[in-house]
Image (tube, rainbow, N blue to C red; front, side):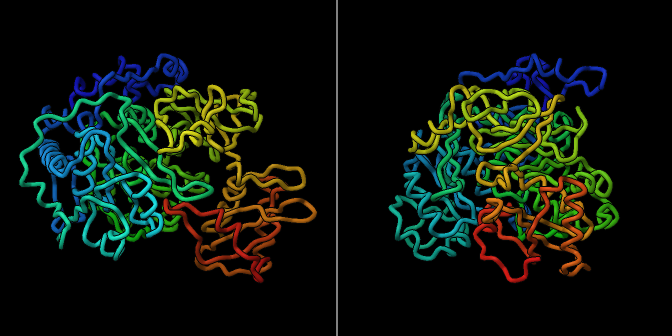
Length: 563
Protein backbone atom coordinates (compact mmCIF):
# COMPACT_ATOMS: atom_id res chain seq x y z
CA UNK A 1 0.00 0.00 0.00
CA UNK A 2 1.34 3.40 -0.92
CA UNK A 3 1.67 5.91 1.88
CA UNK A 4 -0.84 8.28 0.34
CA UNK A 5 -3.52 5.57 0.29
CA UNK A 6 -3.54 5.35 4.09
CA UNK A 7 -2.59 8.91 4.97
CA UNK A 8 -6.04 10.21 4.08
CA UNK A 9 -7.23 8.55 7.30
CA UNK A 10 -4.40 9.85 9.49
CA UNK A 11 -4.18 13.40 10.81
CA UNK A 12 -0.47 13.77 10.14
CA UNK A 13 2.30 11.26 10.73
CA UNK A 14 2.02 11.43 14.53
CA UNK A 15 -1.30 9.61 14.34
CA UNK A 16 0.09 6.63 12.42
CA UNK A 17 1.74 4.68 15.21
CA UNK A 18 3.57 2.50 12.69
CA UNK A 19 5.87 5.46 12.14
CA UNK A 20 6.56 6.21 15.78
CA UNK A 21 10.14 6.21 16.97
CA UNK A 22 10.87 3.25 19.27
CA UNK A 23 14.08 4.93 20.43
CA UNK A 24 13.98 4.92 24.24
CA UNK A 25 15.38 8.45 24.22
CA UNK A 26 12.11 9.68 22.68
CA UNK A 27 9.56 9.86 25.49
CA UNK A 28 6.53 7.73 24.66
CA UNK A 29 4.16 10.21 26.26
CA UNK A 30 5.44 12.95 23.94
CA UNK A 31 4.29 10.83 20.99
CA UNK A 32 0.97 9.98 22.65
CA UNK A 33 -0.02 13.58 23.46
CA UNK A 34 -0.57 14.87 19.90
CA UNK A 35 -2.41 11.72 18.81
CA UNK A 36 -5.92 12.33 17.56
CA UNK A 37 -8.06 10.12 15.41
CA UNK A 38 -9.17 11.63 12.12
CA UNK A 39 -12.76 10.57 11.39
CA UNK A 40 -14.11 12.00 8.12
CA UNK A 41 -17.78 12.82 7.81
CA UNK A 42 -18.27 10.07 5.25
CA UNK A 43 -16.67 6.68 5.72
CA UNK A 44 -17.44 3.15 4.54
CA UNK A 45 -15.60 0.11 5.87
CA UNK A 46 -15.74 -1.79 2.58
CA UNK A 47 -14.35 1.17 0.65
CA UNK A 48 -11.58 1.88 3.18
CA UNK A 49 -10.54 -1.74 3.64
CA UNK A 50 -10.78 -3.05 0.07
CA UNK A 51 -12.28 -0.66 -2.48
CA UNK A 52 -9.49 1.94 -2.50
CA UNK A 53 -6.84 -0.78 -2.91
CA UNK A 54 -8.78 -2.25 -5.83
CA UNK A 55 -8.29 1.04 -7.68
CA UNK A 56 -4.76 1.68 -6.40
CA UNK A 57 -1.29 0.27 -6.31
CA UNK A 58 -2.32 -2.86 -4.39
CA UNK A 59 -4.97 -3.93 -6.92
CA UNK A 60 -3.10 -7.08 -7.95
CA UNK A 61 -1.89 -8.05 -4.48
CA UNK A 62 -3.52 -11.08 -2.86
CA UNK A 63 -6.17 -9.94 -0.40
CA UNK A 64 -7.83 -13.24 0.56
CA UNK A 65 -6.69 -16.85 0.62
CA UNK A 66 -9.66 -19.10 1.34
CA UNK A 67 -8.36 -22.45 2.53
CA UNK A 68 -11.88 -23.70 3.20
CA UNK A 69 -12.18 -24.35 -0.53
CA UNK A 70 -10.28 -27.21 -2.15
CA UNK A 71 -8.07 -26.24 -3.79
CA UNK A 72 -7.59 -22.99 -1.86
CA UNK A 73 -8.95 -19.94 -3.66
CA UNK A 74 -7.10 -16.64 -3.90
CA UNK A 75 -8.58 -13.23 -4.64
CA UNK A 76 -6.64 -10.05 -5.28
CA UNK A 77 -7.95 -6.75 -3.94
CA UNK A 78 -9.36 -5.93 -7.37
CA UNK A 79 -11.08 -9.33 -7.60
CA UNK A 80 -12.36 -9.22 -4.03
CA UNK A 81 -13.88 -5.78 -4.53
CA UNK A 82 -15.48 -6.78 -7.84
CA UNK A 83 -16.99 -9.96 -6.37
CA UNK A 84 -18.23 -8.04 -3.33
CA UNK A 85 -19.89 -5.54 -5.67
CA UNK A 86 -21.59 -8.41 -7.50
CA UNK A 87 -22.74 -9.78 -4.14
CA UNK A 88 -24.08 -6.34 -3.21
CA UNK A 89 -26.11 -6.20 -6.43
CA UNK A 90 -27.35 -9.72 -5.71
CA UNK A 91 -28.48 -8.81 -2.17
CA UNK A 92 -30.10 -5.61 -3.44
CA UNK A 93 -32.10 -7.69 -5.93
CA UNK A 94 -33.31 -9.76 -2.96
CA UNK A 95 -34.61 -6.58 -1.34
CA UNK A 96 -31.75 -5.58 0.97
CA UNK A 97 -31.68 -1.82 1.49
CA UNK A 98 -29.87 0.71 3.64
CA UNK A 99 -30.27 -0.01 7.36
CA UNK A 100 -31.66 -3.55 6.93
CA UNK A 101 -30.04 -6.42 8.82
CA UNK A 102 -28.38 -9.28 6.94
CA UNK A 103 -27.49 -12.33 9.06
CA UNK A 104 -24.38 -14.26 8.08
CA UNK A 105 -24.07 -17.73 9.59
CA UNK A 106 -20.94 -19.12 7.98
CA UNK A 107 -17.36 -19.99 8.80
CA UNK A 108 -14.36 -17.95 7.71
CA UNK A 109 -14.10 -17.92 3.93
CA UNK A 110 -15.06 -16.23 0.70
CA UNK A 111 -18.81 -16.40 1.30
CA UNK A 112 -18.54 -14.63 4.66
CA UNK A 113 -16.07 -12.07 3.28
CA UNK A 114 -18.30 -11.16 0.33
CA UNK A 115 -21.41 -10.95 2.50
CA UNK A 116 -19.71 -8.61 4.96
CA UNK A 117 -18.31 -6.31 2.28
CA UNK A 118 -21.54 -6.35 0.26
CA UNK A 119 -23.60 -5.32 3.29
CA UNK A 120 -21.26 -2.40 3.98
CA UNK A 121 -21.49 -1.33 0.33
CA UNK A 122 -25.29 -1.23 0.58
CA UNK A 123 -25.35 0.67 3.86
CA UNK A 124 -26.99 -2.41 5.38
CA UNK A 125 -26.11 -3.91 8.76
CA UNK A 126 -24.30 -7.24 8.88
CA UNK A 127 -25.10 -9.52 11.82
CA UNK A 128 -22.55 -12.36 11.81
CA UNK A 129 -23.47 -15.28 14.07
CA UNK A 130 -21.01 -17.85 15.35
CA UNK A 131 -21.17 -21.48 14.30
CA UNK A 132 -20.63 -22.26 17.98
CA UNK A 133 -24.05 -20.89 18.84
CA UNK A 134 -26.73 -23.41 19.64
CA UNK A 135 -30.17 -23.55 18.16
CA UNK A 136 -31.91 -21.47 20.85
CA UNK A 137 -29.30 -18.73 20.63
CA UNK A 138 -29.55 -18.57 16.85
CA UNK A 139 -33.32 -18.42 16.94
CA UNK A 140 -33.17 -15.62 19.48
CA UNK A 141 -30.53 -13.59 17.61
CA UNK A 142 -32.20 -13.84 14.21
CA UNK A 143 -35.59 -12.89 15.63
CA UNK A 144 -34.14 -10.13 17.81
CA UNK A 145 -32.24 -8.59 14.89
CA UNK A 146 -35.37 -8.38 12.76
CA UNK A 147 -33.49 -9.86 9.80
CA UNK A 148 -35.52 -11.25 6.94
CA UNK A 149 -32.51 -12.68 5.08
CA UNK A 150 -29.91 -15.19 6.25
CA UNK A 151 -26.79 -16.18 4.34
CA UNK A 152 -25.35 -19.56 5.34
CA UNK A 153 -23.72 -22.71 4.02
CA UNK A 154 -25.22 -26.11 3.33
CA UNK A 155 -23.23 -27.84 6.07
CA UNK A 156 -23.90 -25.20 8.71
CA UNK A 157 -27.63 -24.85 8.04
CA UNK A 158 -28.28 -28.61 7.76
CA UNK A 159 -27.06 -28.97 11.34
CA UNK A 160 -30.11 -26.90 12.37
CA UNK A 161 -32.79 -29.06 10.78
CA UNK A 162 -36.19 -27.37 10.88
CA UNK A 163 -34.99 -24.02 12.23
CA UNK A 164 -35.94 -22.20 9.04
CA UNK A 165 -39.58 -23.14 9.56
CA UNK A 166 -39.50 -21.41 12.96
CA UNK A 167 -38.32 -18.11 11.49
CA UNK A 168 -40.11 -15.53 9.42
CA UNK A 169 -37.46 -15.27 6.71
CA UNK A 170 -38.01 -13.71 3.33
CA UNK A 171 -34.90 -15.34 1.87
CA UNK A 172 -32.57 -18.10 2.99
CA UNK A 173 -29.40 -17.92 0.89
CA UNK A 174 -27.29 -21.09 0.91
CA UNK A 175 -23.78 -21.62 -0.40
CA UNK A 176 -22.93 -25.16 -1.40
CA UNK A 177 -26.21 -26.36 -2.86
CA UNK A 178 -29.56 -24.63 -2.34
CA UNK A 179 -32.74 -26.72 -2.33
CA UNK A 180 -36.47 -25.97 -2.53
CA UNK A 181 -37.25 -22.31 -1.91
CA UNK A 182 -33.69 -21.50 -0.85
CA UNK A 183 -31.62 -19.09 -2.94
CA UNK A 184 -28.26 -20.30 -4.21
CA UNK A 185 -25.44 -18.04 -3.06
CA UNK A 186 -23.58 -18.84 -6.27
CA UNK A 187 -26.21 -16.84 -8.19
CA UNK A 188 -24.44 -13.67 -7.08
CA UNK A 189 -21.87 -14.21 -9.86
CA UNK A 190 -24.56 -13.65 -12.51
CA UNK A 191 -25.07 -10.04 -11.39
CA UNK A 192 -23.23 -7.07 -12.80
CA UNK A 193 -21.18 -5.31 -10.09
CA UNK A 194 -22.95 -2.54 -8.19
CA UNK A 195 -22.29 0.76 -9.95
CA UNK A 196 -21.12 2.48 -6.78
CA UNK A 197 -21.44 1.82 -3.07
CA UNK A 198 -24.03 3.72 -1.07
CA UNK A 199 -22.50 6.79 0.57
CA UNK A 200 -22.39 6.22 4.29
CA UNK A 201 -21.59 8.55 7.13
CA UNK A 202 -18.91 7.44 9.57
CA UNK A 203 -21.56 7.14 12.28
CA UNK A 204 -24.01 5.06 10.23
CA UNK A 205 -24.71 1.56 11.64
CA UNK A 206 -22.77 -1.26 10.00
CA UNK A 207 -22.14 -4.20 12.32
CA UNK A 208 -24.45 -5.96 14.79
CA UNK A 209 -22.64 -8.39 17.07
CA UNK A 210 -24.41 -10.78 19.42
CA UNK A 211 -22.44 -11.60 22.53
CA UNK A 212 -23.26 -13.27 25.81
CA UNK A 213 -23.64 -11.35 29.04
CA UNK A 214 -23.73 -12.46 32.64
CA UNK A 215 -27.50 -12.88 32.45
CA UNK A 216 -30.09 -13.63 29.81
CA UNK A 217 -29.76 -14.40 26.12
CA UNK A 218 -27.07 -12.76 23.96
CA UNK A 219 -27.54 -9.05 23.36
CA UNK A 220 -27.00 -7.19 20.10
CA UNK A 221 -24.15 -4.67 20.10
CA UNK A 222 -24.41 -2.16 17.27
CA UNK A 223 -21.30 -0.54 15.78
CA UNK A 224 -20.83 2.19 13.17
CA UNK A 225 -18.55 2.30 10.11
CA UNK A 226 -16.09 4.46 12.07
CA UNK A 227 -15.32 1.39 14.21
CA UNK A 228 -12.49 0.38 11.88
CA UNK A 229 -10.70 3.69 12.30
CA UNK A 230 -10.68 3.27 16.07
CA UNK A 231 -8.72 0.03 15.76
CA UNK A 232 -5.86 1.10 13.46
CA UNK A 233 -3.51 2.35 16.18
CA UNK A 234 -4.11 -0.39 18.73
CA UNK A 235 -3.93 -3.28 16.25
CA UNK A 236 -0.73 -1.80 14.85
CA UNK A 237 0.70 -1.65 18.36
CA UNK A 238 0.02 -5.22 19.38
CA UNK A 239 1.38 -6.23 15.97
CA UNK A 240 4.63 -4.45 16.90
CA UNK A 241 4.24 -1.42 14.54
CA UNK A 242 4.78 -3.63 11.48
CA UNK A 243 1.60 -2.85 9.56
CA UNK A 244 3.38 -0.43 7.19
CA UNK A 245 5.83 -3.12 6.12
CA UNK A 246 4.96 -4.95 2.91
CA UNK A 247 4.20 -8.65 2.66
CA UNK A 248 2.43 -9.38 5.94
CA UNK A 249 -0.01 -12.29 6.19
CA UNK A 250 -2.72 -12.27 8.89
CA UNK A 251 -4.88 -15.05 10.31
CA UNK A 252 -6.85 -16.00 13.41
CA UNK A 253 -8.72 -19.16 14.36
CA UNK A 254 -11.44 -16.92 15.85
CA UNK A 255 -14.75 -16.72 14.03
CA UNK A 256 -15.41 -13.77 11.74
CA UNK A 257 -18.52 -13.35 13.85
CA UNK A 258 -16.42 -12.05 16.78
CA UNK A 259 -15.00 -8.54 16.94
CA UNK A 260 -11.52 -10.07 17.27
CA UNK A 261 -11.74 -11.95 13.99
CA UNK A 262 -13.44 -9.16 12.08
CA UNK A 263 -11.33 -6.18 13.14
CA UNK A 264 -8.11 -7.55 14.65
CA UNK A 265 -7.38 -9.49 11.48
CA UNK A 266 -9.80 -9.24 8.57
CA UNK A 267 -10.63 -5.54 8.09
CA UNK A 268 -7.43 -4.13 9.60
CA UNK A 269 -5.28 -6.49 7.57
CA UNK A 270 -7.01 -5.38 4.39
CA UNK A 271 -6.89 -1.71 5.38
CA UNK A 272 -3.09 -1.88 5.41
CA UNK A 273 -3.03 -3.80 2.12
CA UNK A 274 -2.07 -7.20 3.51
CA UNK A 275 -3.16 -10.77 2.80
CA UNK A 276 -5.77 -12.32 5.09
CA UNK A 277 -5.99 -16.12 5.27
CA UNK A 278 -9.32 -17.80 6.03
CA UNK A 279 -9.20 -21.23 7.62
CA UNK A 280 -10.75 -22.99 10.60
CA UNK A 281 -10.73 -26.47 12.08
CA UNK A 282 -11.12 -28.13 15.45
CA UNK A 283 -8.37 -26.41 17.37
CA UNK A 284 -5.25 -28.24 18.43
CA UNK A 285 -1.76 -26.92 18.97
CA UNK A 286 -0.30 -29.09 16.22
CA UNK A 287 -2.94 -28.00 13.72
CA UNK A 288 -2.42 -24.31 14.55
CA UNK A 289 1.35 -24.47 14.19
CA UNK A 290 1.06 -26.45 10.96
CA UNK A 291 -1.44 -23.93 9.53
CA UNK A 292 0.69 -20.94 10.54
CA UNK A 293 3.81 -22.46 9.01
CA UNK A 294 2.17 -23.71 5.80
CA UNK A 295 0.56 -20.36 4.97
CA UNK A 296 3.41 -18.13 6.05
CA UNK A 297 1.36 -16.33 8.70
CA UNK A 298 3.23 -13.34 10.11
CA UNK A 299 0.66 -11.86 12.50
CA UNK A 300 -2.14 -13.56 14.38
CA UNK A 301 -4.69 -13.09 17.12
CA UNK A 302 -4.92 -16.01 19.54
CA UNK A 303 -6.76 -16.22 22.84
CA UNK A 304 -4.73 -17.05 25.96
CA UNK A 305 -6.57 -20.38 26.07
CA UNK A 306 -5.30 -21.26 22.59
CA UNK A 307 -1.81 -20.10 23.48
CA UNK A 308 -1.79 -22.26 26.61
CA UNK A 309 -2.38 -25.32 24.40
CA UNK A 310 0.36 -24.25 22.01
CA UNK A 311 2.81 -23.56 24.83
CA UNK A 312 2.71 -27.24 25.79
CA UNK A 313 4.71 -28.00 22.65
CA UNK A 314 8.42 -27.86 23.29
CA UNK A 315 10.76 -26.20 20.79
CA UNK A 316 8.14 -25.24 18.16
CA UNK A 317 10.83 -23.57 16.05
CA UNK A 318 12.57 -26.94 15.65
CA UNK A 319 9.38 -28.74 14.64
CA UNK A 320 8.30 -25.99 12.25
CA UNK A 321 11.54 -24.34 11.06
CA UNK A 322 9.79 -22.31 8.35
CA UNK A 323 7.63 -20.27 10.73
CA UNK A 324 7.41 -16.63 9.62
CA UNK A 325 5.45 -15.53 12.70
CA UNK A 326 6.48 -12.05 13.87
CA UNK A 327 3.91 -10.92 16.46
CA UNK A 328 0.91 -12.28 18.37
CA UNK A 329 -1.97 -10.26 19.78
CA UNK A 330 -3.98 -11.81 22.58
CA UNK A 331 -6.97 -10.75 24.65
CA UNK A 332 -10.35 -11.70 25.99
CA UNK A 333 -8.94 -12.95 29.29
CA UNK A 334 -5.79 -12.25 31.29
CA UNK A 335 -2.62 -13.67 29.78
CA UNK A 336 -0.47 -15.57 32.27
CA UNK A 337 3.10 -14.33 32.56
CA UNK A 338 4.34 -17.86 31.84
CA UNK A 339 2.92 -17.53 28.32
CA UNK A 340 4.83 -14.31 27.74
CA UNK A 341 8.04 -16.05 28.75
CA UNK A 342 7.28 -18.98 26.44
CA UNK A 343 6.69 -16.58 23.56
CA UNK A 344 10.03 -14.91 24.12
CA UNK A 345 12.12 -17.99 24.92
CA UNK A 346 10.66 -20.87 22.90
CA UNK A 347 8.61 -19.29 20.14
CA UNK A 348 10.82 -16.19 19.86
CA UNK A 349 7.79 -14.02 19.11
CA UNK A 350 6.40 -11.17 21.24
CA UNK A 351 2.94 -11.77 22.68
CA UNK A 352 1.16 -8.46 23.26
CA UNK A 353 -1.91 -8.60 25.48
CA UNK A 354 -4.69 -6.07 25.09
CA UNK A 355 -7.92 -5.39 26.94
CA UNK A 356 -11.37 -4.18 25.97
CA UNK A 357 -15.02 -5.08 25.51
CA UNK A 358 -17.05 -5.67 22.38
CA UNK A 359 -18.85 -2.43 23.30
CA UNK A 360 -15.67 -0.35 23.63
CA UNK A 361 -12.42 -2.01 22.77
CA UNK A 362 -8.62 -1.98 22.70
CA UNK A 363 -8.46 0.38 25.65
CA UNK A 364 -5.28 -0.91 27.24
CA UNK A 365 -2.47 -3.09 25.99
CA UNK A 366 1.15 -3.83 25.30
CA UNK A 367 3.59 -3.10 22.52
CA UNK A 368 7.00 -4.55 23.29
CA UNK A 369 8.49 -2.46 20.48
CA UNK A 370 7.65 0.76 22.34
CA UNK A 371 7.74 -0.09 26.05
CA UNK A 372 8.70 -3.06 28.24
CA UNK A 373 6.09 -5.67 29.04
CA UNK A 374 5.64 -6.14 32.76
CA UNK A 375 4.52 -9.75 33.38
CA UNK A 376 1.04 -9.83 34.87
CA UNK A 377 0.20 -6.30 33.73
CA UNK A 378 -2.46 -5.46 31.15
CA UNK A 379 -0.16 -2.83 29.65
CA UNK A 380 -0.70 0.89 29.17
CA UNK A 381 -3.57 2.95 27.81
CA UNK A 382 -3.52 2.81 24.01
CA UNK A 383 -3.36 6.08 22.03
CA UNK A 384 -6.70 7.73 21.37
CA UNK A 385 -8.30 6.25 24.48
CA UNK A 386 -8.93 8.18 27.69
CA UNK A 387 -9.05 5.65 30.52
CA UNK A 388 -9.58 6.05 34.26
CA UNK A 389 -9.94 3.86 37.33
CA UNK A 390 -13.08 5.15 39.04
CA UNK A 391 -15.01 4.59 42.25
CA UNK A 392 -18.73 3.82 42.50
CA UNK A 393 -19.57 7.50 42.07
CA UNK A 394 -17.54 7.96 38.90
CA UNK A 395 -14.63 9.75 40.55
CA UNK A 396 -11.14 8.92 39.20
CA UNK A 397 -8.98 7.14 41.76
CA UNK A 398 -5.27 7.72 42.40
CA UNK A 399 -2.51 5.36 41.32
CA UNK A 400 -2.49 2.16 43.34
CA UNK A 401 -6.20 2.15 44.20
CA UNK A 402 -8.43 -0.62 42.83
CA UNK A 403 -11.61 0.49 41.07
CA UNK A 404 -13.62 -0.01 37.92
CA UNK A 405 -11.98 0.49 34.52
CA UNK A 406 -13.87 3.19 32.62
CA UNK A 407 -13.49 4.63 29.13
CA UNK A 408 -14.44 8.16 28.22
CA UNK A 409 -17.66 8.56 26.24
CA UNK A 410 -15.63 10.03 23.35
CA UNK A 411 -13.79 6.72 22.80
CA UNK A 412 -13.20 6.00 19.08
CA UNK A 413 -14.32 2.37 19.38
CA UNK A 414 -17.50 3.07 21.36
CA UNK A 415 -20.59 1.24 20.18
CA UNK A 416 -23.78 2.99 19.10
CA UNK A 417 -25.79 1.06 21.67
CA UNK A 418 -27.47 -2.21 22.51
CA UNK A 419 -29.90 -3.27 19.82
CA UNK A 420 -33.40 -2.17 20.82
CA UNK A 421 -32.32 -1.81 24.47
CA UNK A 422 -31.89 1.91 25.21
CA UNK A 423 -32.20 1.42 28.97
CA UNK A 424 -29.41 -1.14 28.96
CA UNK A 425 -27.30 1.20 26.86
CA UNK A 426 -27.84 4.05 29.31
CA UNK A 427 -26.83 1.80 32.20
CA UNK A 428 -23.33 1.56 30.70
CA UNK A 429 -22.76 5.26 31.41
CA UNK A 430 -21.85 7.01 34.64
CA UNK A 431 -21.52 10.70 33.87
CA UNK A 432 -18.85 11.06 31.20
CA UNK A 433 -17.59 7.51 31.72
CA UNK A 434 -18.46 4.22 30.04
CA UNK A 435 -18.44 1.38 32.56
CA UNK A 436 -16.67 -1.87 31.75
CA UNK A 437 -17.59 -3.98 34.77
CA UNK A 438 -13.90 -4.87 35.16
CA UNK A 439 -11.72 -3.85 38.08
CA UNK A 440 -8.04 -2.96 38.09
CA UNK A 441 -5.46 -0.57 39.45
CA UNK A 442 -2.93 1.58 37.61
CA UNK A 443 0.58 2.12 38.94
CA UNK A 444 2.67 5.29 38.89
CA UNK A 445 4.23 4.29 35.55
CA UNK A 446 0.88 3.95 33.80
CA UNK A 447 0.67 0.14 33.78
CA UNK A 448 -2.72 -1.38 34.52
CA UNK A 449 -3.11 -4.48 36.71
CA UNK A 450 -6.28 -6.54 36.38
CA UNK A 451 -8.29 -7.54 39.46
CA UNK A 452 -11.31 -9.27 37.91
CA UNK A 453 -14.91 -8.84 36.83
CA UNK A 454 -17.37 -7.28 39.20
CA UNK A 455 -19.06 -10.68 39.41
CA UNK A 456 -15.75 -12.61 39.50
CA UNK A 457 -14.01 -10.76 42.30
CA UNK A 458 -13.64 -12.97 45.36
CA UNK A 459 -14.36 -11.35 48.72
CA UNK A 460 -12.84 -13.46 51.45
CA UNK A 461 -12.49 -12.39 55.08
CA UNK A 462 -12.60 -8.75 54.04
CA UNK A 463 -10.05 -9.15 51.26
CA UNK A 464 -10.78 -8.58 47.56
CA UNK A 465 -9.06 -11.28 45.52
CA UNK A 466 -8.85 -11.22 41.73
CA UNK A 467 -9.05 -14.74 40.25
CA UNK A 468 -6.71 -13.77 37.39
CA UNK A 469 -3.76 -13.17 39.68
CA UNK A 470 -4.21 -16.54 41.40
CA UNK A 471 -4.53 -18.28 38.00
CA UNK A 472 -1.42 -16.51 36.76
CA UNK A 473 0.55 -17.71 39.76
CA UNK A 474 -0.71 -21.29 39.53
CA UNK A 475 0.25 -21.74 35.87
CA UNK A 476 3.81 -20.72 36.71
CA UNK A 477 4.10 -23.97 38.67
CA UNK A 478 5.74 -26.64 36.47
CA UNK A 479 2.92 -29.13 37.11
CA UNK A 480 0.09 -26.82 35.97
CA UNK A 481 -1.03 -26.55 32.35
CA UNK A 482 -4.17 -24.51 32.94
CA UNK A 483 -6.11 -23.12 35.89
CA UNK A 484 -9.49 -21.54 36.59
CA UNK A 485 -10.19 -19.83 39.90
CA UNK A 486 -13.54 -18.91 41.46
CA UNK A 487 -14.97 -17.93 44.81
CA UNK A 488 -17.36 -20.33 46.51
CA UNK A 489 -19.54 -19.62 49.56
CA UNK A 490 -18.01 -20.19 53.00
CA UNK A 491 -19.78 -19.62 56.31
CA UNK A 492 -16.68 -18.20 58.01
CA UNK A 493 -15.04 -16.09 55.34
CA UNK A 494 -17.97 -15.28 53.08
CA UNK A 495 -16.10 -16.85 50.19
CA UNK A 496 -13.01 -18.96 49.80
CA UNK A 497 -10.78 -19.43 46.79
CA UNK A 498 -11.22 -22.62 44.81
CA UNK A 499 -8.90 -23.59 41.96
CA UNK A 500 -9.66 -25.98 39.13
CA UNK A 501 -6.37 -27.30 37.78
CA UNK A 502 -5.45 -29.21 34.62
CA UNK A 503 -2.06 -30.87 35.03
CA UNK A 504 0.80 -31.16 32.58
CA UNK A 505 1.26 -34.69 31.21
CA UNK A 506 3.33 -36.76 33.60
CA UNK A 507 1.84 -35.30 36.81
CA UNK A 508 -0.89 -37.03 38.78
CA UNK A 509 -3.40 -35.57 41.27
CA UNK A 510 -2.44 -36.01 44.89
CA UNK A 511 -2.77 -34.36 48.27
CA UNK A 512 0.96 -33.66 48.22
CA UNK A 513 0.77 -31.83 44.88
CA UNK A 514 -2.25 -29.79 46.04
CA UNK A 515 -0.36 -28.69 49.14
CA UNK A 516 2.64 -27.79 47.00
CA UNK A 517 0.42 -25.60 44.81
CA UNK A 518 -0.90 -23.82 47.89
CA UNK A 519 2.61 -23.16 49.11
CA UNK A 520 3.51 -21.91 45.65
CA UNK A 521 0.67 -19.36 45.72
CA UNK A 522 1.44 -18.28 49.28
CA UNK A 523 5.09 -17.78 48.45
CA UNK A 524 4.64 -16.03 45.13
CA UNK A 525 1.41 -14.05 45.55
CA UNK A 526 0.06 -13.58 49.08
CA UNK A 527 -0.58 -15.72 52.09
CA UNK A 528 -4.31 -14.99 52.10
CA UNK A 529 -4.84 -15.63 48.35
CA UNK A 530 -4.03 -19.33 48.20
CA UNK A 531 -6.74 -21.77 47.03
CA UNK A 532 -8.22 -23.52 50.05
CA UNK A 533 -9.83 -26.04 47.70
CA UNK A 534 -8.24 -27.56 44.60
CA UNK A 535 -9.99 -29.82 42.11
CA UNK A 536 -7.97 -31.52 39.39
CA UNK A 537 -9.81 -31.69 36.05
CA UNK A 538 -9.16 -33.08 32.58
CA UNK A 539 -10.74 -30.14 30.77
CA UNK A 540 -12.64 -26.90 31.33
CA UNK A 541 -16.08 -25.62 30.34
CA UNK A 542 -15.56 -22.89 27.74
CA UNK A 543 -17.61 -19.93 26.62
CA UNK A 544 -18.54 -19.63 22.94
CA UNK A 545 -15.47 -17.43 22.47
CA UNK A 546 -13.13 -20.10 23.83
CA UNK A 547 -12.51 -18.67 27.30
CA UNK A 548 -12.72 -20.63 30.52
CA UNK A 549 -16.25 -20.14 31.85
CA UNK A 550 -15.86 -19.18 35.49
CA UNK A 551 -19.65 -18.97 35.70
CA UNK A 552 -19.95 -22.69 34.94
CA UNK A 553 -17.11 -23.50 37.34
CA UNK A 554 -18.92 -21.62 40.12
CA UNK A 555 -22.11 -23.53 39.44
CA UNK A 556 -20.54 -26.99 39.50
CA UNK A 557 -21.45 -29.16 42.50
CA UNK A 558 -18.73 -29.69 45.07
CA UNK A 559 -16.70 -32.70 43.96
CA UNK A 560 -15.67 -35.47 46.30
CA UNK A 561 -12.16 -35.27 44.88
CA UNK A 562 -11.39 -31.80 46.24
CA UNK A 563 -8.04 -31.50 47.93
